[in-house]
Length: 113
Length: 111
Image (cartoon, rainbow over all chains, first blue to last red; front, top):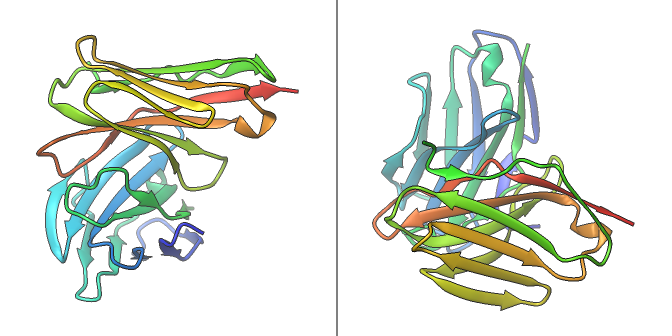
């Protein structure tokens, strides 16, 4: 157990729907990162939050949004889902803003049908 | 040119052999270099973390960074079947708020 908790582990939903993925970072970690992993694209950086503030955005679609709450857990919201959004979504956390060598959770596998 | 390039493999080697995994990159601002191991359907697990150029050793693993060539390597000595996994290189700059990953190399250690 890495200490980073992601729920749910699996999610199957239909196109056009909206889902929320949840991440609880390791105790004491202030930074949370979200990554998307698909077979052909590898691990793609989506967004980084540090202590509740957005720090960096990657190639995150406008249909996707995220936030980090005062208790430091984070949620990734995916809306108007398309078949191509099917992927593994990982959250990672680190103690500081720089996010060197983050610790990853076990991921949420999203299947859009 | 992609920021981080990594041969996807698969790479198959016999048990006990030395494995060499590599990545090249284009962004000279990268200062922090990492190697992660990922088993199928699991989250990436940090193996090695180095700053700037040089070597770092941890057990059977050695990480090398050559910033002049923009080239990093991971060596695995006395490879074991349990080392069979996908190995991801990752890097970031000193001012970056993001880490960029290679696509990963699939490694198979043959008993």
